[in-house]
Image 1 (cartoon, rainbow, N blue to C red):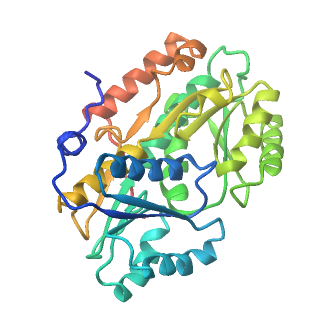
Image 2: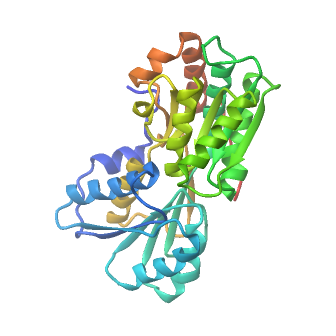
Length: 334
């Protein structure tokens, strides 16, 4: 049995046959599916649910990267009156939903990776990305402090981010820095802002500059532009840790750890909950390792092949501590 047991409600919704009318599911992606693992997993969770529940359907809409257009596109999507529930994922979406919900009183929304309470047509679930950031930072600190060939003694790690936003500034980056400093308080964090989520050339340049300044481990959170970070880091024999999904195959030996959000599983569970008329409307939940929705992908062969037992053992202890509740990282309100 995995040490990361899923909570009872999750196991229930994965295993219990649904006795409900077919659902018409709208998936609103504030970006694009291709090259965005978090959005691809969102859609995949909905598609899995529909495939297992005859008569259900899914329509996926990609709103693109221009955030100024999201509210108009969401309004148009909702205005089609085609969906029993609209599933989405982004910290910005609860505010957009709040603005349009009064005009569509019968429409229900579920937003993952967001947090807002008190809206009767909306249920949100926020990943504890302070916890996720801490895990990634702790691993980055152990890698940087190790005798691995690409590590150096400068105690300096980096992040390349698409932009500043509340979850990044209040959860992810502080968590990552806390994890680094838990390994060694002298660690410094170099954060570079790309300004978009797609410019791989600029992302590569930022990575090269960062590495030249002494950084030996980078966490990229910059969408499809991360391919530029991967190439630069691989070419310069430095290391990466990744967020949100299994990325080992992109650069074996360069990507040494992935701390994944179980977005597909959470999307499926929340749709199953909706089908059972059990959605806690108006409530915002927070989930993490203990609930089974944040996971260090430490069973991947690349993880064992490229990291020494000394690092893997300390990471196992960390994850066990979080799963048991001995270590906790309360997510601050956004």
